[in-house]
Length: 185
Length: 181
Image (cartoon, rainbow over all chains, first blue to last red; front, side):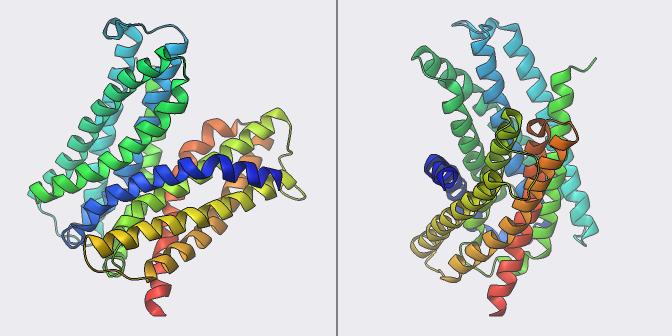
């Protein structure tokens, strides 16, 4: 029972915090649920976008922390070649992923009988790209500023950045998703 | 020439997105039933996050224990694995209850419509997805290790991908059962 107790005591707070953040993001979706129900591609895209932004949060924070520990980052982080390279890779993968997700959601909606409408298809693609691009930028910025701050104070950025960026990603992706649906559709 | 980092991140993301979209397709198929329950769209993202966080941590713990040699890659008679499964089950039930309470409270105070059925749906969904996902995670982690692979490199994207599909499936079954009752 020692393992059970250890897992429960160490995990419960952070799992509740991360899940509650996502749940708060879901309030925006709940207010638009009847609208979303008629937009099949958006429903199809919802779990994927939430997951994808969270993945980028984990990747950016872990890579950034590794660069810090390897001594490849300092006060003048904007001059770092490695950070620039990381940004380029993340931006390229994020853009391709967003387009793939938008196109795949439209195709599956079409296969499920959703009548094709070019304007809606383009709007779905816009939501995917805009949400991904803006949140990846925010996560990058938070990782740099927060990571350097925590590191300078002698703490391990790994323990701080992963929960904060994934939480921000979950909460932000749903909120942005809801806002874009409200204004674009 | 594409860098190793690009290839690894890109491959993992493509797999993850495909799984997420498949989960979304399942969700779309049952959306008419799901939106009948007030608070379902509030519960949904937190529920997915919880499943992925809990299962992700479990496979990570199993991977570390296998590498350190503190457990064997066999399910039968494995106390460490049994205790992990028990802990994950209890943790999921507690967090599901908390999420259902938030969904209930939010719909009650913000949207002025709520139903206690959301608690039953959350608990049934967690039990169904736990039974399937945890067993798959456990057996796959051990199988990969026995075949000479590092579960830490493979199980992360794999668990979030199958986790989304199983979790949405569990939620759909739970909603159908509760609406039928």
